[in-house]
Amino acid sequence: MTENMPKPSGETPFKPEYQEYIDENKGRGSLKIQASVAEDAFPLKDVFVDVSMIYKGKRYSIYNDTTDSSGIVNEIVLPSKLSAESQTPQNASDSVTQYLISAYHPGFEPIVDCPVNIFDRVETILPVSLNPLGIGLER
Image (cartoon, rainbow, N blue to C red; front, side, top):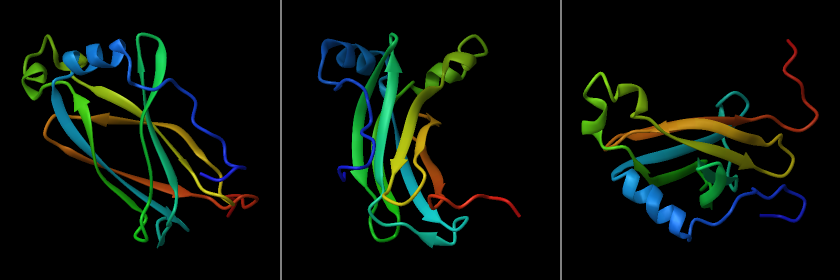
């Protein structure tokens, strides 16, 4: 990440709280991020992507990477609720595991804390379209 880009805030996950989080979220889902510019027309390389979570009132940054030449960060495996936990009406509302995605690239408006839901044994694809700095969306 370059000097002039904002750094994601949050604690590292290597604490007892993270083990608790993993124990509570025994499922695994995956996330694929597709970064682009010009309303998804062109992939954007070298976008810094941060995946964070809020657990017990604290923010944890648990993964970061940069997009490849296709604008993709692929196969981010994340803890999730087990799919069996969402198959009863009593548990359905509590079956979502949510993460916050931030994306930064020099010369583009950052995307900060875009929520994404991860489900057990499901790949979630999150397209993020970055806007160049100083360019509005007026038409």
